[in-house]
Length: 445
Image (cartoon, rainbow, N blue to C red):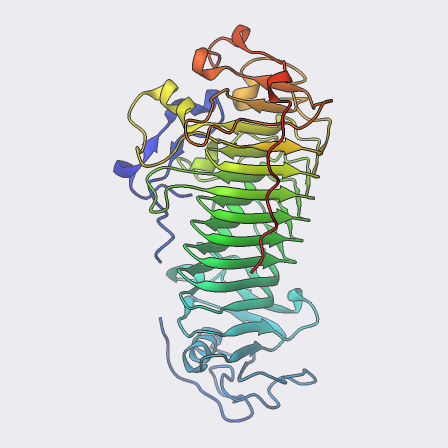
C-alpha cells in the first residue's frame, strides 16, 4: 500500500531489522481514484478513426459477437473508441474487444452497472490493452459500478495500477494477464488487479507478473475469492488486507519477494481483517529481490518470505505446499512488535494482534536456508519454518494453533519479553501450540 499522507501514517523506520516492514499506510492513496466522447460507429462497429465502438455485428472478422452490445476494434484512436463504448453501454451490456493490440493513452473508466468487458481472442494474449504511452490519469482502467466482470484480456504497462474497482459489489476478474514489458522494476504500477472497499469479489484463472507492490491486492473488502491464479515476478504475489471472509486457494505464487500476505494495517477506514482461509496453494521460491517503491510497506518485506500474517485474526493456513523460500515459510507478527521498537501510539481502533491463527497440514520443506530481515538478524541457519513474535491476543484470546504433532520446526521470538533484541529469550518448543481451532468455512456467495 502506498504512503500518500505521511502525517497519517505510522512510520516504522527500524523494521528493516525485524520484519522488513518500515511503514504503515494511513490509507490507500490509490483507493479513491474521463469520459472521452466521440466516434460511435454504426451497426457494424464503425470503421472511423475511433476504432469502431458501437454496434455488435460484423466488427470482428471471424469472431463470435453473440451477446455483445458494444464492439470495439483496434484503430487510430483506441482510447476514444474504448471510452466511448464504456460510456454508451447500457446496464447489463457487454463490451467486446476484438483481438488485437489497443494503445491506450488515458485512464479509462466505467460507472454503468452490470457490465462485462471481454476480449474476443482465443486467449488473453490475443487482446491487449497497452498503456505504455499513457499520459493522463493515475491508473489504467477504473470502475465504480456493481456487477462488473472483466475477462480474457492482457493489460500491459500501466504506469499506475492496472484494473481498479472501488466500492462495488459482485465483481469478477477472470482469465486476465497483467504485466509490464520492463520486467520486475520499481517504475511498474503498484497493483495489477485491485478491488478495494468492495463486496463479493472473485479473482480467478489469471496470470500477473511484475507489480511493484502486489500482483493481486484485495483491500478493505468483504467476501473475496482468489483462486487458480499464477502470480510471479511481483513484490507480493497476493495481498489480503483489512478484509473479512477471504478464501485464497489453488494459486501458484512463485518468484516473488513474498508469496502471500494477510495484513491488518492501522488508520484505515475498515479497522479489522479476519477469516482468511489460505489453502491448497503452491508457495515456492519467493526469493526475488525487493523492487518496491521506497517508503511503501512492502518495500521492507524481506525476500524469501513464503507467507506473512500481520495483525489479521482467524487466519487459517492449511494444505499448502510451501518450499524453497529462503527466509521463512510462515511468519506471524503483531502490530505491537512495531510499537516496542519505535514507541508512539498505534491506532486505538485497530486490534494489533493476529489472534486465532491456525496453521496445519501443510507441506513445508527447504525453507529458511538464507534468512533475511527479522529472521536473518538472528544469524540462525536454517531458520525454523514457522516463526511467531509471541504476542497473545487481547481480543478473542484465541492463540496460535499448529494442530496435532508432529509440528513443523517452530520459533517463538518472545517479542513481549525482549526477544527481538535478544534471541536467547526465544523458544523452539511448539508444545503450547498443540491445539486445534474450528476450521473456517469456504467463502460462497
